[in-house]
Structure formats: structure tokens, C-alpha cells
Image (tube, rainbow, N blue to C red; front, side, top):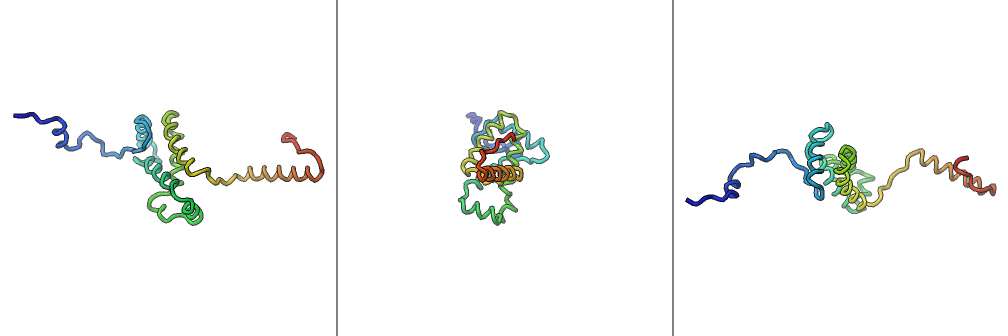
Length: 157
């Protein structure tokens, strides 16, 4: 009687050895970084299995949208964010995960996230109040100096 090939025997068996938990499918990450993400998703109370991959997919989809849609979302919001997740919250989650990971794993994930950020361009950040006050104070000082004919005031004075 001919022997059956091991691959054919395994194909008929049910998936007993495989874990039913979702695995993160993030391209360009090493198995070591993926296993670290799985460990973080299991051990942190603010993460569930698959959250990092979903946040990265949401951020990638948001970044690759046309600029006119990004402006519309910025002004009016997006109704789909209520059911499918806010990409900005996903980006914040990715920042939290990057801080929680080891330097080696974070470097790999940061390269992917920074590539997406670079694709989007520099974000239109609103400067904090202290920065605005410092800029306006230095402008006032330079205007006074120009009117009086004095040289520019030094920063230490």
C-alpha cells in the first residue's frame, strides 16, 4: 500500500496548533518587533489584540487621501470616524506604543510611521501660547529698536 505524503496528511488535519488570536500583519517589521507588539497588546490595559495594526492601517489610509478631503475632515469631521475609528487617535496610539517598545523595535515601527508622516507633509501645528507670546514680544522689541534707531536688543538683557 502506498504511503501518503506528510503534506497531504497535514492538509486534512484541523488547525490545532495555531492560535485563534489575531496576529499583527505589519509589512516591513521583523518577527522580533511583531512579537513585541503582540506582547504589548496582551500586557497593556489600553491595548487589545490587533489595535496597533488597525491604528497603522487607519493612519495609512488617512494619509493617502487627497488634500481636499483632509481639509474637509479638519473643518467638519468625518462621520465614518464614529464607526471605523479616528485616524488621529490611531496616530496617538502609535506614539504611545513607540514609547512603550524597546529601542530596537521602536526604530523599525518609527521608520514606517515617519514614512507615512513624510508622505503627508509637515503637519499644520498650532504653536503653544508661550511660543506665540515670545514671538510677539521679540517683534515688539525689534519695532521699538527700529523706531529709536538703536541696535537690536540682546537675548540676555
